[in-house]
Image (cartoon, rainbow, N blue to C red):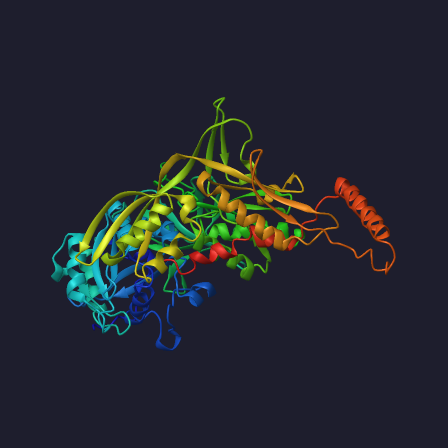
Length: 622
């Protein structure tokens, strides 16, 4: 391996021809973070004594679960073997592999000219590998196909090199084989990055334009903004302007990540780095915005990112109502760190004030809830996740429904629900089980392709509402963990959907309402009334628990009254005396029933509304 010169050129003076911007994309658990670790060691930016596994995964949750949630940018010096006298600057971005964090990946790809497509030599191509590859192709990036984990006994490098070559459109011999764990072949990969990925193109003397691809909140320094400079250059202490908001700030610090923050005099064409302006307001730094100089700045902004569309909505409520302002502040700060998060205030009769939050999927929901609880010390209740429906009435008016309580009364013409195009990759022996599962979830088969003699790709159109609960869990159990799933929204379709109301003692309880398919409404009603019968304590009078669609009751359970032993003092004597006492008690209960309302304990709401049994299904999702 060639020695790395101790002096790395000042960031502001780096020739764009020596810069390479690339990211690593792969399916979850195929070794992206481990490969990034070896690159950090090999280029010498992290000393051996400071090194730890998954060095770029900074969050506790990332380290505990072994998944990447946030993209991380890092600057690496490298002198390739074919040109030992010259040190190139490689800006690498490590990306998440999970389907819920595709938005992070798309932002990283927009900041690069090339990408390493990493595939596990023991598992082969998975659904998310294909999705990320198509994203890279849409961005016209140079793709370097790489097989990882070739040192494993179960590795089949020849077989999967051919699969990968067919996919990318290259020769199987061009597929690099590395072991991120041992470091085998990583120096050859870095040489290939320098040789194959084009240098960034930009106009050095034009007005400065830099794209914000990420930002984080630091409690001491305020908002830290990560940018990729396209044209011109940004210098320390100059005044900058955010083009979408028009806000101007002074650049207090500018620099690069190597991988810790390293201050510099400025950033030039093609460079990736960070800006600190001391701003504490998180709304000032919007991902996808263009940064330019205030004096003689650019007129035209760069094309930003398309805003992510939330797929799943869930209500987040503080257990203690007085924590509501803290929850608002926490969501504000998290939104800066996670641009895909959207939320708006809402109130619930049962749970008080809270927020309706949009997520990209169930793992995203799970991670955000855990971060709120850990980083901001909040105790939260998350309601069961649901999707957005569009309801058209007979009079032509339209309603957007993100919460079952918003479902309109009256004559409904059509209900539209979101649908997704799901891609499932699995061994051929499980085709029957997968098709049966998709059929029961109202899926429509789009097509099937054999990637090799023992692997198949099945495409289905599925209603989003059917896959946000336990679809992934079911898929994994029916295929012994071999199937992988990826999905993308493809619009909406009309469906026979109805709102199931729960009535306690004849009164509707909005918090328990749900929107479900007509064929599944009965089963849902029976299940929920049975659950409520167990959770609601017995009252002094009999309480009917009913599930109804409109005015038609479809399921009923009765919570029996508490019976006080009024006959305790009656021993012996005439039966008519006992009957008289019981009749008197009956009259009293009847009167109570007229005026009494059922008290539902907070625990019952939490148990029925909480997404704990469903959110868990996204935890190990690949």
